[in-house]
Length: 118
Image (cartoon, rainbow, N blue to C red; front, side, top):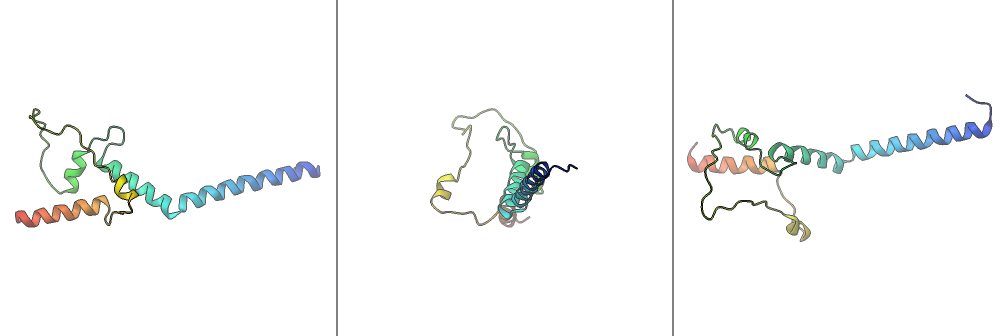
């Protein structure tokens, strides 16, 4: 600690700045939109590889409660090689999803289980 008033005032100002930065970071991290964004990212990463965009079929099969195996067969004429749905245009027009990805998958699986009598 110093007896120099100017140095003490600078130290107090620096401490206030650090405290304000810390509070800003805490407020950002605790904001509901930030929390939701983190959770959405985590759920998406569970079902889709963020690096490649490829579906994580093992996790999808587990979520479906299935024991199915993924079989990679030779390409067929007319196969769609790459298809990634994008809802950006719909969102820009005001559409918002009513369900999360896990909820949608669960609802879809229950529907097909009902049709198949399982």
